[in-house]
Image: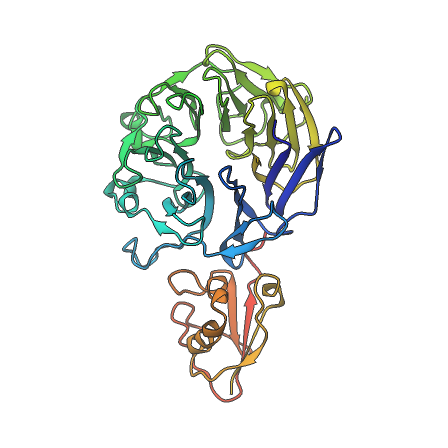
Length: 360
Length: 90
C-alpha cells in the first residue's frame, strides 16, 4: 500500500507519510499559494506542482527529491494568435497533469483552463500546444462548466498503448486520439445531458463529464461521473450506459476506479446540482463491486450529519492495491479509507480547501 | 533616469530588487528588467504580453493608462511602482 499521500490545496502542497500507525504531514511546500494540480510520476519519482497564483499567473514546479526542493519550470502557454481573437485568454489554470505512458519516459500531458491540451517530451521543461485539438472547429461549441471557460480535467493514457488518449472536457464531451494526439474524434455516445434543449440531450459534444476513471488492468472499463449521473463504458469510452438509480444521489464530481478489479469503483455523491453538499448532511462514499448493479454507501468514520464537504473531481484517489483510498474536501478535511473504503480515518480537519489528493 | 521597484510580495517568487532603467516607456522599462531577469516576465505579463489582470503599475502617483501596450511615457526621475492589485488573492 502507498504510504505517501500528496495534497494540493488552496494554500499549499502538503505531504503526508504513514508512519507508526499515523499519517503525519511535514511543512507545506508553497505555503499560502493555490496549488491547482499535482503529479507524482511513477516512472521516475519526480513530483510536479501547478500553482495558480492569484496575482502572478500559472506556474509549474518540479521536485527531484520527493518534495524537499523545487525548481520552477516554464508553464505551458497559449501561443499568440492561437485563438484568433483579440481577447483570447491566456492559460488560467493547470487542471490536470498525467504521465505519458510507461514506455515514454519524460512525456507528460497537461490539461488546462481554457480547454487546451499540452504535451511535454522532456519532463515538463518545455510544452507544446496540441494544435490538432485546439484548432478543431468543434471546439467552438465547448462551454464553461463551473468556470468561465471550458477546461480539460481528465487525460487517460491507455496502459496498453500510450498513443491512445482519452480526454474529457467540462463542457465538451469526450475525445479520443489513437495516434498520440495527431487526430481526434468525438466519443462518449450514450451520455445524457438535462441542461440543454431536448434535441441536444444525447449530443456527445454537449456532455458535461465531471471525471473519468479507467481500470488499469482492464482499460476498456471507463467509469464516468457526469453532471447528470453515473455512466459506465466497457469499450474504452466509445459508448456508455447510464447506471440508475443510484442512492443517495448520482450527482458528484469524483470517481476512482479499482486498479485491478473492473467491477469496483468509488463515487462521492452530493445534492444535485446547485446545492452541492452531502445529501442530508451525511458524507458517504458510494462503492460498487458488481459493475454498477448495486452500490454500498460507505460511511464508517465519515461525518454522519451537518457535513458541508464537497469532494472535487481530483480529490479522491485509490492506491495501487485498491485497498487504500484518500479523499479531501472543500472544507479542508482529509480522510484515508482502509479496506476499500469500509472504514475511514480523519487525517486532518484543518487544511485549506483541497483540489487534489494523490498517492505516490 | 527612471527608477522601477516591485511589490515585496513578488520577492518570495522571484527576486526583483529596485533599479534604475534607461527607458522612454513602461514597456521599455519592463523589457530592460526582463532582459536580465527573464523569469520575472511571466509573473507580470501574460503570454500575450498584457499586464496580468491583478497586477497594477503606477508612474509616480498615477496608474498607467495602457495596460495592454504599456506605452505610458516616462521622463526624467519618474518612479515606477509595480504592485499587486487589491484583487485576485484568495
